[in-house]
Amino acid sequence: MKKFRNPFSFQVDYDRESIFKVATDKEKEEQTFMRPSTSFFGDAVRRFRRNKIAVISLFFVILVLLAIFIVPIFYPYSYDQQLGIIPGKPVDGSFANLAPFTYCETEKARMAAGEFIWPHIFGTDNAGRDYFIRVIYGARVSLLVGFFAAFIVLIVGTIYGSISAFSGGKVDMIMMRIVDVIYSLPDMVIIILLSVVLNNAFDFEGTPLENVGTSLISIFIVYALLYWVGMARLVRGQVLSIKQTEYVLASRSIGTSTPMILRKHIIPNCLSVIIVSATLQIPSAIFTESFLSFIGLGVSAPMPSLGSLASDAIGALPTQPYLLLIPAVFICLIVLALNLAGDGLRDAFDPKQK
Image (cartoon, rainbow, N blue to C red; front, top):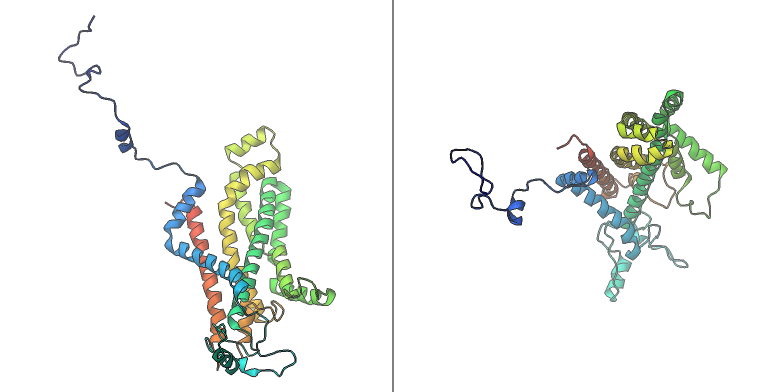
């Protein structure tokens, strides 16, 4: 029996197919305005890619990293090779102090005989060593110091700060007082003292650490002993706020162990802050190593670093200013690129940024 309907009613008649039709898939997609779901890190990467300066800086750092590891493989000169010295023959001093992209008389004669001679891109120093490959190795040493120091700070500071904050009470108070004491220690003085002690107490000759030098080893030790305190304080502040959240309290209520809570819940939620802080630690370590190498407390000769190259070039400043300018520009560009990339990561991982 057909249901009677008042013709003056304002209710919608759903039985009339001429009014309502099933929407097609294309029409449903046209009504979808929400963006695809993404994770926190995926959203951070998307925001980072919008920062063109940070992306260019990161690309420059990656390009430098590729250059310092790939160029020495095919480059014909070595960082310690003195081109004018051949065993059993007189020293050829014409290889010393060559300008960029120039050849000495010996090389010109060999080229006239049909031999191919690789150009000296940045010229040579006063010992006849190719300056380009020395700058490449200097950048390698400086960047390795920076990344190694950031790794030490990342590991020690994260573990120490998270344990201090999660333990609380007297444990937190004692651990933070230790941090305050370490903050008061003069790092430069300790580096100098450690360098003297290691130089007198240990003999690294014939070992892989011979070219590194006691001064650089002392820098690594000081970073492991002193420079992690800033990271520890930062992580402690993050953990203090995270450990009061509901999911952490729920984990503790069901009997989850403290190491498991730190590994599964707290540290992953602090990871963005940790990454940004570690990234900004790299240029600081590079600048510190360059400064120490400049005053003679860096790597041992003939292994170069950007700071030692700048220090050695001071004597040739009136005649060859580019020997000082090239490593100084490399230091500035690398530190600037790392700082800009770190600022971009900080903005990308900040949840308050839109």
